[in-house]
Amino acid sequence: MTVLRILNDKGRKVVTVAPKVTIDSVDKTQSETRIGAVVVVEKGEIRGIVSERDIVIALAKHGGAALEKLAEECMTTKVVTCEPADSINVVMQRMTAGRFRHLPVVEDGKLAGIVSIGDVVKRRIEDVEKEAEQIREYIATA
Ligand code: AMP
Image: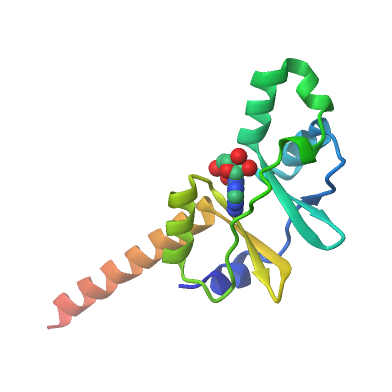
C-alpha cells in the first residue's frame, strides 16, 4: 500500500492558510473542516504546519491572546513530508519518529495532498483484514 493509493481513495485536497492569518481564523478553519492540521503556504511553497497541538500550546502560553497570534508565530517550520510512491510503512515510521499525526505529500516540489494517522490506520486495518480472509480461505480449501 502506497501514499498514492491513499490519495486516489481520499482525494488530494489540502486545507492551507497564509502565514499572516490569525490563530483564531486557523481554529475556525480546523473546526469547520473537521481537520487537525493546516499547511501554511506562501507563494506556492510550504512554510509550515499548524496542528491542534500548536494551538493548545499557544493557549497555555498566552491565554486568550493566543487567538490574535499569527499562524507563522505558532507553526512548525521544519515540515516532514512524504511522496506518493512512499509506502505506508515509511509514513508510519516518519510519524512515529517525529511524534506527529500529519504528513503533507509533495510531488514534483508541490503540495499534492496530506495523509493523517487516521488514513494510515484505516488502510492498515483493511490490509490486515484482507490478509486474514485470504489465510482463512487458504485453510478452508487446503
Ligand atoms: P500533530 O500530532 O500532527 O497534531 O502535531 C504535533 C506537533 O508536530 C505540532 O507541533 C505540529 O506542528 C507538528 N507537526 C505536525 N505534522 C508535522 C509534519 N509533517 N512535520 C513536522 N512537524 C509536524
